[in-house]
Length: 625
Image (tube, rainbow, N blue to C red; front, side, top):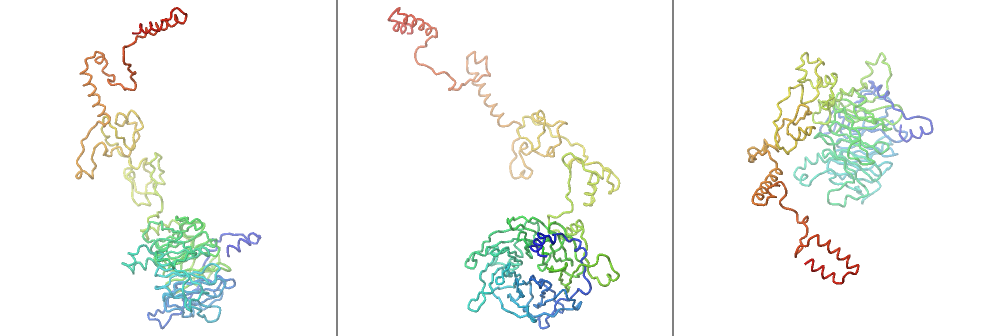
């Protein structure tokens, strides 16, 4: 079911990529597929007769895809072949691997080896190819519990670990530092904000900075998430973060965009194509991010489950078409990755919180779920029709989930998530009447009657009432209009469309309704209701400043005109008394010359040209003088 093999076979014409929703609807858990986890450790200080399973992984190597690895709270690991029927309702015999709980494990690519991460602050490498599980090496450098571990794709030697101390360490199995294991690269305090916060509240910061999820995008890119900072960070492993004393700087950061205070992430998953990243969040959402573009906003959201602890994990189908997750409501849910939103089916049968899930890579559809009820169940495709012994043999079934009911139940159980609602209520304010059925649905969802329904009378379920044309004017009588203000210069936000009414300062009956018509105008009134006692009240004036300046200039002009005794000024008082200097003709010093003399000079010039006299120029000068 690998996506690459499916594409190759489809190209060759042997198969086609199809969805198998119908197979998910037929998932059933029979009585002989229920197991009681792993046997407890009798020498443990806090002995638990039924320790829950915290981690389960199917082997990805070819030929061993049916091998399931389990790890429990007592630090034991066990292997199970799900194709071989074992003793139902019995615990598996395990090997004591750690002195504390095992939180995560990872299979080595193309090898029968795996690495476990436990609460004893160590990560250990195990050889499971032999009959007895044998320890190969121990990697100890963290100062708190190791929460997650992941191998680099197609690399047998390099893996990364994340712990509660906020450190991300990169290990190489081939490297030996004088006989001691040391990390090749270490990202300290990768999800800690502020040095003061770390020193003052060490215990609280250790919880929020705890590394809860790691995944490789490629050979040199590592993605991490933490328990409380609401960030997903992308690290470039070509940079040596161990030599830097300051806080490490990631290559990209994708912040939490939801509306809840529970912004921690519990696990990270990369699809087989390496494009979409799935991050399970504590706000009961699973966000899908486009890693090819590092878009900080999620491209999809999957909801419907409850994630109240950091033990709830997710997994992907081998072809990346389906997403499965545990839940705190004793169910396991499956989504279709191509359709974000509510789940497709839910697996019912456990009696406590479902923590981790695993998807088998070979053969027909098989899913394993682990729960705090100390049981792990194997879900297989059952018969399409019910048989006579189904009530006795079948303990759990897959149920189809109603999208609307799931959304409503999530709203009731998680009030902190503010971005969820059942129906987007629409109150038409553009003049289009709402239909009776839409209005009835809105009123039924809210559980209250509107004012129009009460005025119409009848039962509260009666949908026959007047249409509401505006959310403000719900069949109300027109209120008293504001008095007209003369020479008003301040305009309202919703001014009337009629220019005459706007100039007059009052609204007529033909003016369209404005929601701010009866609100106080603080520009005209001069006061604000919250500043009445703090600031003095301004003097109310109905005249704007331009009109005031024009009146002052008119008075000055009229006073100056009274002083002038010229009859022209008395006849035309409206003309401007002062002219611009640039418009006046330039004055010439000396005696004024009449225009008639210039015409005379022209006649004398014509006589001179005809040869009638030689003293014409001095005579013209005498005539001019």
